[in-house]
Length: 101
Length: 466
Image 1: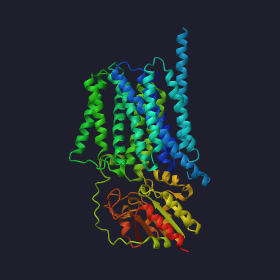
Image 2: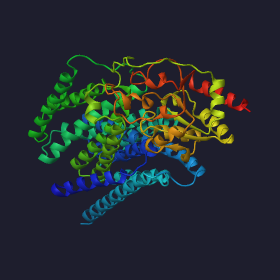
Image 3: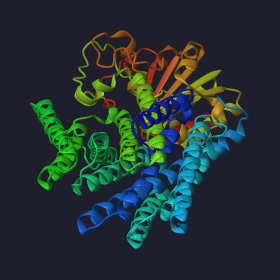
Image 4: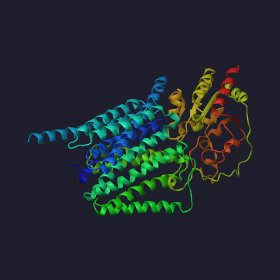
């Protein structure tokens, strides 16, 4: 499905995208952004689900279970903490119109 | 025929959902990188995650649905519960913890793939092994980082030959990894299990000696690592959404790590291998003068009649939970016509931007807060710079003293203000253990006390200054 050079292209373009998307971020947002990108790699949940869905014996089920559990923690924890931090910036933003970016 | 068609429709549906998810992640991150759209950026990304997660239940040939649901439920509820109640000051270690969980999940995917012992092609074998190492190191390393910032591990473990022991752990992990690759993933259990155990051990060993001051860089680095591990495992199981999201985070995290390391004037290699952070000898040699105390009454009057006050908050401020009091003081001074600004060092707090989060929580508006480059020329025109819980980031030795461990680090030039007031609990040293020359300068006065209580006294004093 995704093989050889196609994968290589995806790797390269995604890397540049990540670099560009972040490159002009103000220091104010570094912490929420780190937390936000932490949430985004929670997509590992999808892979962990597929892996557990494919587990054939007890050992694989245990490993798969741990994987899904950890990934779900990554997703939910990442979302909750990022959302909490950004929600606070909302009120500050209303006080002074415009950004410092 | 019809089942074949149905399978192909399902497959396309899944791929389309992953495509949309990847798109939403990138848009979400883009929005999160400017203050205007930041708050709904996370919602965009969240919608992407929801779509990708739900559609995965349609994945053909899946078993163990109940196990999947139970695991998601347990992991999700624990994370939701902890994420809701964690105080903002403890956010960095929670980010480390959640990040480590992601790394662990990536390693688990690799472990399941490799433990099965079925032959796989060379490229996926390489990426499974590399992603497995990175994920496992990120997992155990992040747990150590969490334990350190949480205060569960207080000492930085250092011993002779440490670098050699670490190198041995890494080399033996790599050797076993190569063994697995050469066998195309058919290596027996007695190779695969030690492989993962050693990778986990290496993550612990390499993180233990790193000092608390360097932890933000380490957390950021592990965040980037987890991204990479997720991307690699995404390739192994043929999941484009994981490749794209993981790679984007890997690159973004690398950039963030570089920015942080630059703000501390250190290279990433330096952070990982030089064991700074707590070892600095910190001799007081060359520091002349004495510590001159001031009481809150005099300090308050000095600020009440100033034209311009610049407040330099550090992590100590947050530990003392004094943000709200400082904002109250600011409003009092503003009402008297005093210009008040906040100077934030890039690494103030426990992560870059952490202090901004803490001040935002207290209600301090953006426009009062300035970055290092913007504020440094302004200290010369300030009557008072008020240092609360900051130390190394205002140490003029970073500019002047060539043999100082922090020489060359960009600092806030708080010493250039006409008067400097330092609120400090006692006479101890900063996070890095280095003596601060600022405290001994002629225009510096020390206001001893707990941050919150000292600021409360300042407020009383300003109120009574008529």
